Amino acid sequence: MMKYLLTVVYIFFTTSGITFMKLGGDSLKLGLKDGFSLSMGWKTFVGFLFYLVSFILWQKLLVKYDLSVMVPIVTGISQIIIITIGYLVFKESFNLVTLIGALLIVVGIVVMIFSVK
Image 1 (cartoon, rainbow, N blue to C red):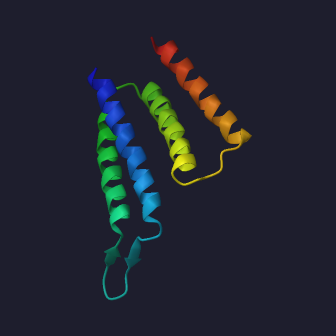
Image 2: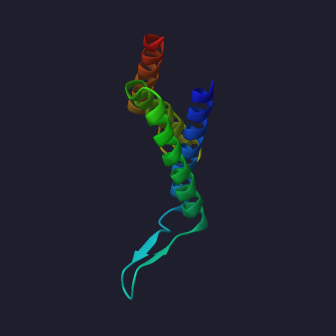
C-alpha cells in the first residue's frame, strides 16, 4: 500500500512541478556578471520546489522497487497527466497523433501492470 501512496504523491509533485514551471513562463534569470545571480518568479519557484520534492520521492521509489516496472509505468502515467494538463490548462493542441500516442502509452501501462502480477 505504501508503494502506491508514494507513487501517487510522486506523480502529483512531478506533474505539478512541470505545470508551475510552465505557468511561470520565462521568469528564470541566471547571471554571472558581478558574481552569480539567480532570480525567478513565484510560479517558477513553486514549480522548482515541487520538482525537487518529486526528485527525492523518485529516488526513494527507484531504490525500493523494481526499476524495470516502476520507470515505464510511472513515466507513462505522468505523460498522460501532462498531456491532459497541456490540453486543459494551456490550450495546447490535441490531435489524432497525440491521441494514438496516449492510447499506446495506456495500453503499455496496462500490459505491464498485468504482466507483473
